[in-house]
Image (cartoon, rainbow over all chains, first blue to last red; front, side, top):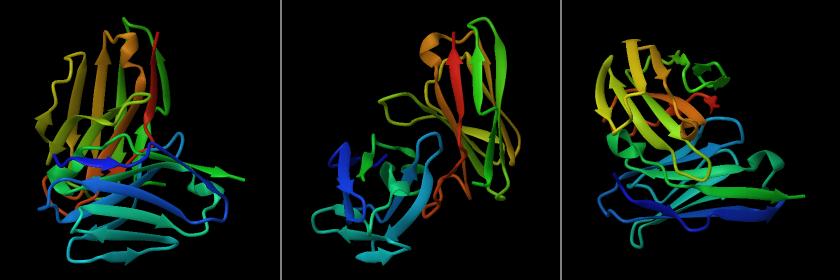
Length: 111
Length: 115
């Protein structure tokens, strides 16, 4: 499967600030990316996805940015709340390629 | 509700016991998956079923035996487990196996402790 890596294993942010979680991938042919969120005691949940024909996609308080030139994508969370505390995974490929997860980034919210 | 339901949520078993984990999806998906999640390690894909046929088996010990009687149900039969098998076992489904743009939908897992 595609090799994707999150830049930081842990990210600590103040409540109310914006969070940015980064991810890099190696296969320039990758054309679909997914972000998952896993809260403590739960399974991963789909947050948002983006296709390679887009540079940006917005959801509710979340934005994913894709930079194909440097093979990098980021998940931005606006006005971070305690409920955003979780481990975040970026997955490349979807389908059979999208079954491999890395270690994720643990987002910690400081009060 | 996630659309994927796993039971039990917690399970403690001895090494000589036999138990089964159950997963049910209410999403009309055709593919189902078992993952293992151990502390400090990435999710490990164990088994993949597509239209009730196993399509992938990632070198999982034979003490783990999957069963998919129909596209909505998936079981993981456990016997003679080891303490290192203690982990969170996650079930997932997707519309189709191998289809791009087909995210996984996970259940909340069974927390297994082997004593």
